[in-house]
Amino acid sequence: MLTKSVSRSFAAVVLICALLSLFKFNHCRLNDWQSPDNYIHACYSDIPALFTERGLDTNTFPYLSASNSIEYPPVIGLGNWLISFITPDTNSYRWFFDINAVILIALFLISALIVRKIRPEYGYLFPTAPAVIASLFINWDLWAVVSAMLAIYYFDKKKYEISAIALGVSIATKFFPLVLLLPITIILYRSAAIDQLRKYLTTTLLFWLVINLPIMATHFAGWWRFFKLNLERSADFGSLWYGLSLLGVDIPFLNLIYLIITITSFIALAIYLLNLKQIPNLAQCALFAVVIFTTFSKVYSPQYVLWLTPLAVIALTKSVQQIYFWIWQVSEIIYHLAIWQYLAQYSGASFGLPAGGYAIATLLRVVAITGFTYLLMRDLSAKSTAQMSVISR
Image 1: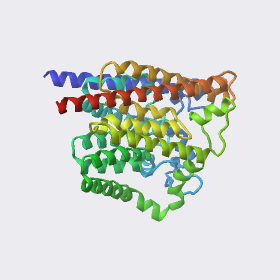
Image 2 (image 1 turned 90 degrees about the vertical axis):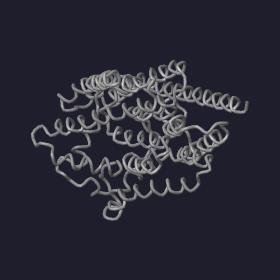
Image 3 (image 1 turned 180 degrees about the horizontal axis):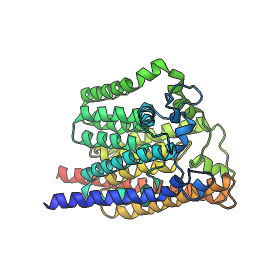
Image 4 (image 1 turned 180 degrees about the vertical axis):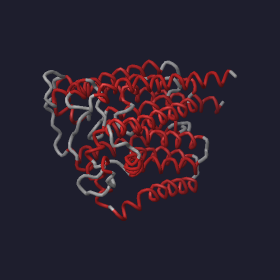
């Protein structure tokens, strides 16, 4: 009875937080997401914007055009195409958003329950994090978060086939979970499970191909647009590079520098994981790979906090780390407010945040997540060494 009561209480907290987020977006919902009003009130959402911009309002297949296909992998693209068929014609913007919002609330609940299952003592941190509440309906990122979290949960339970399937689906949803293959590879390598690693990688690739190949074969240019945009984009909103450029520090040969720093960081992470005295579980180290990806990416969208926060919660190993968690979360909510006020001024509003203020908020967020990650890595290394010392005795 106590377990049922706690579960119901937890679900109620998650749903209340989701409704708070929906309330935040309701001003834009009632006013048709007009710009710059949507930035002034911090309620911009890609969901209604891409409904018409990508032809979903006319049920257009999302990968039909080489120049105007939806800029997301197939699970999100096809999912929203199917949603477009059940969207009423009257107030279609609002209905499309509302249908997506219901799905996102359900996925938010599932994600929170998985986080709680992995790290029950810190379960409430994910759904109650202010930056998470502020970002639930910006985009479809939670579609990928759920399957990524399932992949981590089942991997640490040694149910590798289910984990690999979930990861293949997740990569076909948002692509960022691809970076989880680095810690997965190192954990299985250190466990001397090379055959299992081969099976894991094969299964992940197979399920990614099952979802992607039909579109690649029939609408390659439209399918490739997502990858093309990410490869060719310059320093964009929220990134370390964009923040530096606003302060007058322009990075020459950005694509090359970005590639070198990212690869070097992943190599450093691999060395760190290989040298831990104790083999970590995926929950403890998945965050590190995603932090590298988001920190050095050429764009940082405010909804990326939906990727980072659940991974941060399951990476916590002791109570004192919550202090650093909340310091980082404060930087995320500052950034969340800063980007919308900067975009308000950028879009012609009579007031907003100047470029310098936005740059400072951007760099503050980078410093906070970097510091938080460093402390987690330091503590994990110390814990691993301590555990091995106990075993050796």
